[in-house]
Image (cartoon, rainbow, N blue to C red; front, side, top):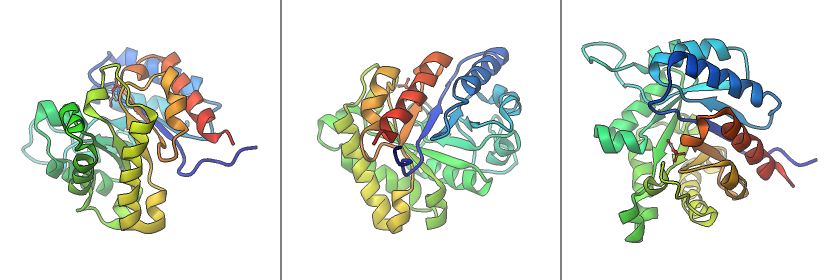
Length: 261
Ligand code: PEP
């Protein structure tokens, strides 16, 4: 019998701008049924805001959690179109993705706004999934570790040690998101190890417990190799989380790969 992996693996779907309410409920309940036997990992789905509360109701009491794809730092007020972290928690979510590269690229998010969102998520009782990652130009210039390190500092230095200890970090190289071009396990591990190093430098042993997810064109046929890497604790999955079959395979094969001896 193999030892449970520490930190506990986590697989989170990010459905982006996808699906009607009935599509969302069907996908969420399909995922719940397909991964019902998985006990060695946490699993969540990431519906759009309109479906979030209904999906959370359907999944209530089960083992699959719900992640919002964003959230705002203010609690209430004249912020038309925004959704407060407390509203997200009230709707039944457990996680909030913050700082996804699409939010940074298309909606002007910065490390500073991402930090505020992460802090607000924690204050609302949510677990933030804080996304960081370099562009292709930054990688080609040999700056991947420096860029990711700066983003990690910029998004987490305002969190208390306790808050950071509760958070999830997602390393998502921008050049790998939705492109079909996955980072090699060695490329991903190099960045994850440097993130781990910074977390351990700040939090000592607790830094070893923080989940660092990889995201960027994760598929059933590449998850096993990624999960064998020491500091890859799970995945944030976009396109391949949109069918029950592919997301369930990612969860099942990912768990098998990292718990095998
Ligand atoms: C994502 O949306 O966070 C993501 C990694 O997308 P994809 O898996 O499609 O590359």
